[in-house]
Image (cartoon, rainbow, N blue to C red; front, side, top):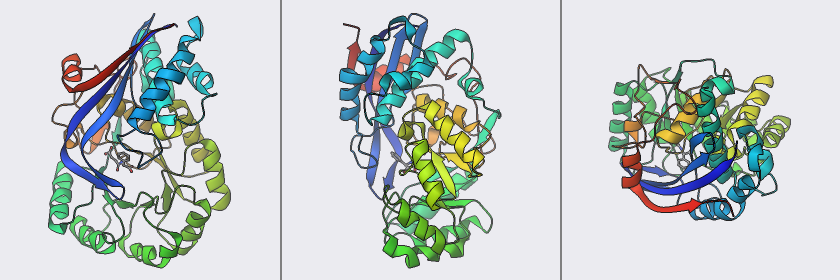
Length: 370
Ligand code: NPG
């Protein structure tokens, strides 16, 4: 396969409801959509980066720049030898920039699989037709509003609730929502690195609420702190931001830093690295689940395909399209009995709505070899 052109669309999509985490609030999702034009046909990818470098060091402008100046030229340089499986090695000389790399890998892989008539789920080794999904609920200053959102999601049939927490909006919020869900309903929390290991006694109070897990309580590089916290809490620790590679999983396993891993292909630099992490976790008996970053239908299609692998035993974060956007960039993903159906069509198995893409695009680059 040969890469003929790459288009980068910077898209601004209004969110149906504000999404606040311990690192900031979003009312609009701005993402880079990547279209790879090859001699076999086109493929699509979505970059997980955001406007600001608050979740990770990457952000949209850095992703665009590294794609234009470093990543896309390396794939043009591969001539006829390009394939989805070759992308990670071709991009390996560029350090970091995992989200930008992943978007490009998915676009190339999508083109290849569409041409071959093979779905992404089948290519990755998926074993499910539909995946259980949860919903991630942002922070709000008003506990009544929070309870209203959660009640709505429970009514819609989501199989698990994840509450964003931060210091000052944690134990009491969790207690109130646990009362609302009733005992036994899958409930978990996500701190996005907002605490320090010195908060261990405070965090251990979460043990009273029978949570599935507490996600990324401490800074991403604090594997030792997470291991200490894991010893001081009954609730399993799940790592998200800390895990960017299989090597990070090895560190977490060696130290006992977590009992569960959140896998996001963007965060780990590619779908194929995501699958390697899945395989390593399965071998080590660590449950995994698939995170989300407010994707459009393009990114959601790849997350749902990945979630169909056997080790994804906990519900993922990718919710139905209408939880995020009034208009998605593809046909909408619809909740059916708390599940999303895994696309079966070739590649990502969704069609990009050209009219919607044009309507929400605010900037564009067209890249060609030479
Ligand atoms: O439903 O896709 C979703 C959002 C799930 O909570 C979620 N994502 O920290 O995992 C996270 C958070 C996130 C959102 C991170 C946007 C980065 C950007």
